[in-house]
Length: 350
Image 1 (cartoon, rainbow, N blue to C red):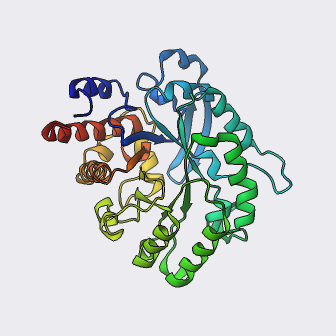
Image 2: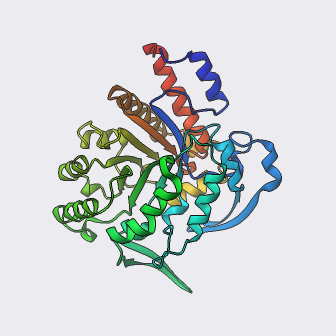
């Protein structure tokens, strides 16, 4: 038995999820949500809330955020944090000058405790086959990305400065590729050859994990590639991907990351797009029945819990990353999974 179950349940009740089990690392996709005051953040932050406007297909929303300094409180509840802002821009410009991302990371380093670990999303400019571009007065367009799998640019503008800034606080780097129809992607052999060359050409100092959102590319040769390079497969509960249990079967019920770390991202309900999930989840203060009280939500929680036990059985460490859009409230989703995990732990006396 790891720790007293009643103590762990009391901690879960307070959203303190950083010591539920040594092989489980709960976290969230982004932080600083003012909606989490009273769950993760104390009341002292209420008079420091900032607002910004976000426009998506389903409307215009006002997002309420906290200063970066609030990350000190975040890590009192969670063991890991997925950074989203690093997805939109590299750390350095091509000429070596720091970008806004560089200075934002400095703020996180200043306020996060030494034991904090970050799952850092790599910039889309190096891993997206196509990039969405906004057009003034017209709809956005998707353009071919000229820097796709640019190993040298990726290393100099992102990976090397990331290592210099965060050091051993890097819990891993997440490479996320956009959804593509089968007609838009190369043949699987070409796709795998491209990735093979990329991983041969970048330093292996940091553990990488890949989330491919095109179901038709999740084939045995792809998983062979991951094992060959020691790259982690990201289990992702996302709109157009199959269920977690199906992904587990596809990967041969084995984990591929060289350092024994595993990433599970709970992003949106299956078959529900980003805009609709955002609309339902907003303002992210609590679980939303249309998201959390469905058969799909129950399956998501059960499959996440099952994956946690598979990771423990294979002596791996699982990072469970919750997104507001999957449930209405990320802390509440993590709390639910932690309680489900402890329900099984009680039966197993673990």
